Length: 295
Image (tube, rainbow, N blue to C red):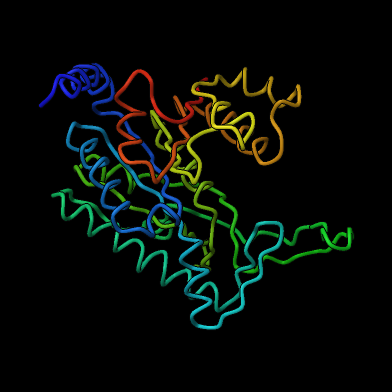
């Protein structure tokens, strides 16, 4: 082992000691799970966190894989304002992809590394109680007119019961939760994975919410790598919104992270899900790799 690697090990020790016994909620996007080598690398990093005593809970979506399966089977997909309309056929595919294919593939990668992972959805143990999203007014970008859209079997989170997750974590298991939920009548809903991850992180009182994204953090100018923000407080984030420095899709992202940290989660991290060792660098080094938002 060379000197640089030894120095990195020394740097990581205080972080390992600090976070042992703490809970990290990690959200996988569909894109970061579609490449087997990338998924294997992520599982290896999270297995290391698990082995040093950090309680890890993974939440995953799978929108990209759902779209690909729908195309193969000829199931027409409707996306309005970046949101998928989940009709009966699409919900059936979501159940197959989320709780079936992707969840099982993630489990197999942890099995290879000797980690006792457990596959769930938000329906198991009543973890996620949801209601059907009511029809929304959406502006048609082509006509400029407002249309009322029914998003079908898309749900909004009503409450989280994290007792099953806590039981698994207390027993040394690593929960892998897909982004489905249900109401008290057993009606199943497709739910945004970021939303579920945030709600579960708040319910668990997590130390960290780590969002593995297509981008490696928050940028003042998305076209300029040099404008990435390494660390941000909620006060700074609010100031960016109020002064107009935050624009476009950055605004709702910052709003949701501010609200999350107000609910007790210690920090939120946005890092590139396809960058090797990004999780380890973000958690165990002084420099980090993506963007960390703190209270």
